[in-house]
Image 1: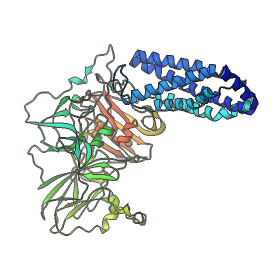
Image 2: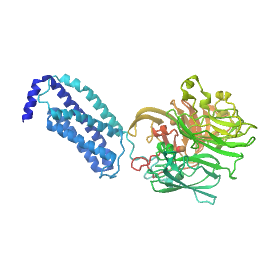
Image 3: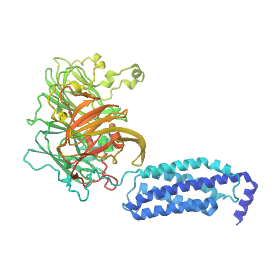
Image 4: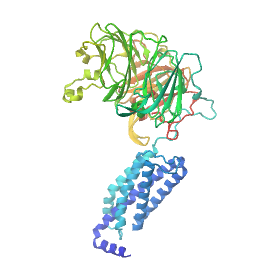
Length: 638
Ligand code: C2O
Ligand code: CU
């Protein structure tokens, strides 16, 4: 009573202050109202997850609305205190759930992931508590005059509160899906589960490997290694071998292994949420396939690929000819990995040296697993010091490869190239980053480290280093006119269907995060309409890149025959790829034979782009998968 008296007197003595009190009332009410709307918006999701949580959010949201309206009508101390209490309670609950986890719910004791929606909501609660405290300390007594002043004073809060509410609600409505199935079984329609698509028994020679995935300290860095090394061990097998790989998961997260470029039965493809459930911590899983094509391949995790691959879960897979030997005297694998600016070769940041004597023949298997930045650009290694042949691309031989002088070879993320050459009679040969050879401009000289090569130089043989004077002006490898033409049955066949693949991007909110959404045919994963094919078809894809970025488009389980790039047909050897680099604003036509049933990923191999939605699948009619992606299963292939 006494307090109220005093407030009355003070308020009437300082009439102009009323509008400040009014601003406080409106600000507090607006922020409470916004938080209420967010709580109501997240309620349905929580109802599905665990009903009591859903009911809690519905109740809290409703109470906040009622109190916010009450506050506008009658801003009393008791109301302000109630709203403060709610905010403090909610903030404490939020903090607990994000740090140690709540003791109740579907996953008691497990911290939940922090998301945009809950950060915005918590911020609004903190912001709202400030004017509420002011009101609790000094509640306004009289009705407001000068409504326009109060309106003007509250405008910033109104704008901020509306924007935050809209952002939080958009984030939750566009949250990561709880469950998405790339090819669900449709009731009433006959379907074959892809789990039946395993390698049939046979009597091929068996090569068995065990790969243990575990956090490992490598040069003082915590990495996720396979058998203690990054990259993981190189698996060498012979064409025709039955390959068995047991993955043992000692990581704190679930994982998988995908056999990049290998044509194998669908159930062995290693894609979390599409061809299997991710292998849980402590569990193991065995992959089995017959290595039907000789060539240079690689393997990597296909669960949370964007994080797990760069952390170290990848390695080379080399399939030798049935004899177990290539025609060259030396057969070296050079695996480029890391991210832009910090690239290593075979796990080394120092320049590498490989042995070879004058006159000896050498095969270099280049594998680009470097995660590029947003531009998605390729690496462009260049061999100097000896004429070379590009013997194969993506593990598939070029027909009649001609000898080339210094050439810059663009390799998109995931792509491979085998270079073959003969050591000169004297001196060494070098494989260098041609970006640096080509662009030692005055600008780069100005910024000292502009002359730092992108990745270590590889020196083959010994003696004098090769001259690099002309290397700067070396042409880019022109695959369209390389090698000797021969019949490519898939490229030349009349297609049974031609599928448009339009690569695009726009700003938006996906998986609850504002991002540059990357689209295929106008939609982002998992909302992209899958490409449907029928077994036995020849399918053409007309890929149009509407963006200013590079997209190495990777197709699982199939070989893509290149038909044309920007309308220019292939005039040399057929080009057979599993990852086709589509340059900015380029158009690429490819074809494949639909002869390997199942549900196959088709995505950009720039991990950033795939993670922002540029991933879909090729679904065979009559096949379905029981596996699902999303927060419910924890399978997140990107
Ligand atoms: Cu190398 Cu779907 O990936
Ligand atoms: Cu891309």
